[in-house]
Length: 243
Image 1 (cartoon, helix red, strand yellow):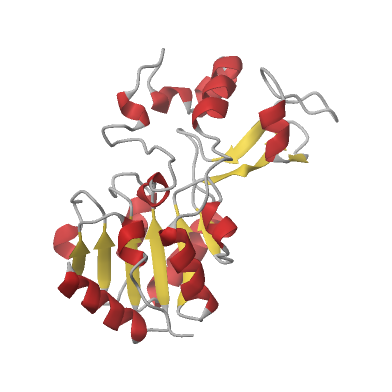
Image 2 (cartoon, helix red, strand yellow):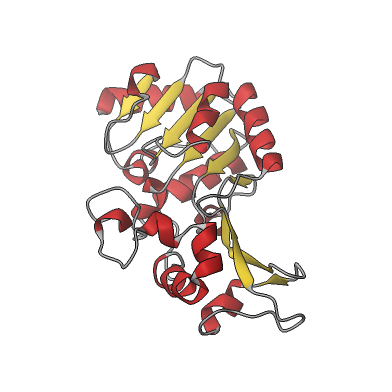
C-alpha cells in the first residue's frame, strides 16, 4: 500500500489534467448503500427486484410503489461528503483535476465543492413534471405522499435520474468522452465497472496512468497501471495537495 500510494502521489504531483470516474463505492463511506455488495440493495428483500422497481416501466405501471421505494432507498439527504469527495474538490481547486464523472445521483461531489461534475445517471436533487416539464426541488418529492403531482398541470413529477430501460444523456456522455480523451491520469474509484454504457466510457482514455481504486477486484484490473484494493476515501484522504 505504501509503495502504490507513493506512486499515486508522484503521478498527481506531476499532472495538471486528471479525470476521476466514480461509482457507488465513493458514497458508501458516507453511509449510502451500493447495489452489489453484501449489504447492497440487491441483497435485501423487496416485492420486486431493485432493477425492476427502478425501471421506467415500473414507474409507469406501479407509480405508488416506485415512489415509496425511491423515497426510502434512493434519497439520502442526511449523507455528508467523505474524504474522497473532499479531496477531489481540493484537486479541482488547485487546477489538477478537470472533471468528476460519476454514476452517483446523490450530489455529494457538489456538496464537497466540486464544480465540474458530470452526472451520468442524473441527480435526486433535480425533478421535473413528465407532462409540462416544470422543475421541482427535491423537497417537493420528499414532502409529498404517494405519487407527486405537479401543481401547474396535474402531471407526475419524476426524478431527473436515469432509470433502467432509459438511455444516458448524450450531451453528458459526449462531455465525458472529451475529458477522458484529454486526461493524462484517469483515476477510477468505487465502481465494479459492470454497469454499461457508463463503464465503457473508460475505453476513451488514451493515457498511460490508469489508476483503479476499489475494495474488490474488477474486470479492468489487468489493464490498469496502478491498482489499489482499498476504500477510495481511505486512499484519497492520504493524498497531499500543494497549495
